[in-house]
Length: 139
Image (cartoon, rainbow, N blue to C red; front, side, top):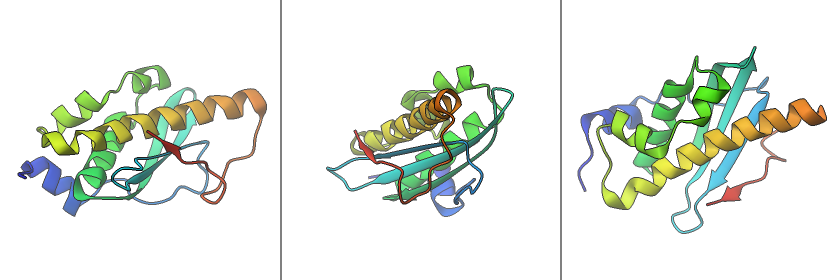
């Protein structure tokens, strides 16, 4: 299995990695088959993603796709970020081996889950969730 230079760079030097205490949107997804779990935190101000972080438990491709997805959406409006697909993440990384495409799907799903969580909090006025009570959505 061969990885591109971009995938290796994002695996070895991940961008935006870590937790976000003041996130106002959190999306957590997992893949039961491979065991990868990905959590994306977003900070939104005036409908723009002003900050984004991730925590991923998984292989190098899962870490790389998380890192690249956070780079892509930082500074985007929510509407723009909702249009980010796994294909966009893969293309930005120069491709992934076929057996690792599911990692890019997790990145897309975690991002979209964080946006949905943000919108649900706006409607319901919920307090930010912590890692302990954020549900994992398995895809």
